[in-house]
Image (cartoon, rainbow, N blue to C red; front, side):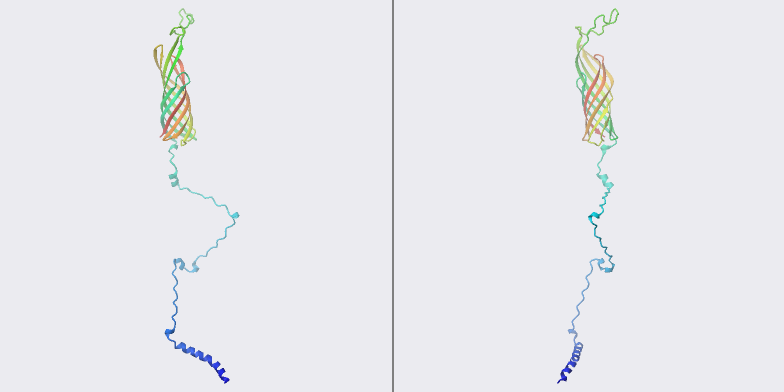
Length: 293
């Protein structure tokens, strides 16, 4: 009875191994479970993902930015303009040509410094301009017409007899033209003048400026025709004289040209057989319009 437990302890492992070996040889195929299928790897979206990890270049580590106090100043940006685009954007500077022709009408008024009345001034100007230095040199031939009138009294007293030379029949110093001997008489003059002036002026700003100021001189030739009425007689006379004038003006661009305003002075001598020598000294005011070609 004491041996039975000991034998059971020795024989039990042997019986268990034989039973296990018997079940493994006699098990049916249906009882063996099928192995689970291994899932296929998902295809990569890009060919670069299929490359081995060892082919990827190493990623360089970005160093941290330096403190603000140690950072160098930013380099200035350089903008290179497109020459084609610049040519398209640049405005047309036709008014800045070095040379251009100019013409236009003139309307003015001459204020005579002697007894002549105001004279209207109508004319035409034809010339040109040339860029010179910071401004413009302008030249033009200006032809104008003026008409003056004068109504005045004069005296031509008779000279005393015998006050001339020592001849027996001395000639009087002045003719006796009326009675009494004071010789007072009235006369009227109508004066027409045609001025042909050569204007030389300098405009201080470039031709493209909207506003410009200028000064100049104007040598001129004056054709005169005077009709004098005295002692109920009409006398006509003509003359050609040379004169000179100066001017100062300003112009402002308006439309295809520029409107201008001038003030000046002109002096021309005249010789009248009836009224004697004189001069047409006038202060001139002129307004006009210049069109550049």
